[in-house]
Image (cartoon, rainbow, N blue to C red):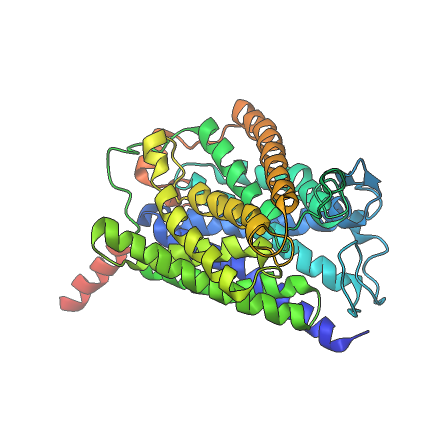
Length: 428
C-alpha cells in the first residue's frame, strides 16, 4: 500500500464530506429566518440517507456490481460492501489511478461523499415548502435509480465513459474529470423537474425573498471552495502531479469566476455584493470540475470568467420563465456544469478546438451532456411524480406562511421572544 496516496485520498474524502455542511450553510443563509433549520436539515438527511443506501447497494450499482448494459452495476454483487471492506491494495473500478495503491474501503469513502453532495445540491431549489419525510424518501430513491447508475455510466466504463459506446462511435474519449455530468448537470436537471411538479412558493414573484444571513452564505461558499480541493484534486486518485494541476486550475477558474460575476453585477446594479462573490465562487467551482485536469491555466481562467458571467445572467431566467428555483440550482449548477462539460471541446489540451484538437471532442462532450440531461429528467420525473401522487411534496399553505422550521421541525433558529423576555427580566 502507498501510504502517501492513501493519506491523500482519506483527506480528500473528508474535504468532500465537508462540502455538504458547506452547502447547508450556503443555502441556509439564503432562505428566510423561518426556514433556515429546515434547510440545514435537508443537507443532514442527504448525508444520513445516502450513507445508508451507499453501504447497502449504492456502491455496488455504481462501481462494484457486474455491468448491465453499460447503465448500472448489479446491486447484489457488492451488497453491504461485500468483498470490499478488506485491507487489500488497489482501487476498485475502471478509473486510471497510475501508481496509486490503497484499500478499496478508501475509495468507498471518497465516492459516497460525492453522492451526498450531489443530492444535497437539489434541496436548494425546493427551499421553504417541502416535507422533510418526503425528502428523505426521495434521497433514497434518487441515489439508487439516478445517481449510482449515472456514476457507473461515466466513471466505471459505462455508456458515457471514455470507453463507452458514445465515445467509440464518435472516435473521441468523453471526459468528465470530477462530475460535470454526474454531479452538477444531474442535480440541476433533477431540481428543475421537481420544481415544475411541486410548484412555486407562496408569494413568488410578488414579494421579496431576501437572504436572512449573508455571513452564513459566505461561510458556506468558503467551505465549499476549501472542500472542492478534495473534490477536484482528489479525483486524481493519488498524491501526484495531476492533483496539483487540478488544485491550481480550480483556483484559477474560481478566482476568475468571482470577478466575472462581480463585474456583471456592477454593470447591472452598480454594486459588488457579498451574495455575488459567494455565488461566483460556486459557479467557477462547478464549471472547472469536469475540466480541471485537461485545461491550461489560461483556459481555466477563461472558462471561469465565462461561467461567472453567464451563471449570473442565467439566475434571472426563473423570473422570466416563471419557475421557482428557490436558490438558483439550475442557474449555477446546471449552467455552470454545462459550460464546463461542453467547453472541454474547445479548451481541452490536445483535443479541444482551440487547443490543438478537432471537432470530435466537442461533439462527444455535447452528446454526453444531452444524455445526462435526458437520463436525469426521466428518472427524476418518475420518482418525483410518484411521490407527489402518493404522500405529496408540499407542506400546507398555512404551514408555509407560519414557517417550515416551526411546523415541520418544531423548532426556531432564533428565539427572539425568549431573548426579549430575558432582557426585560434583567431590566426589572
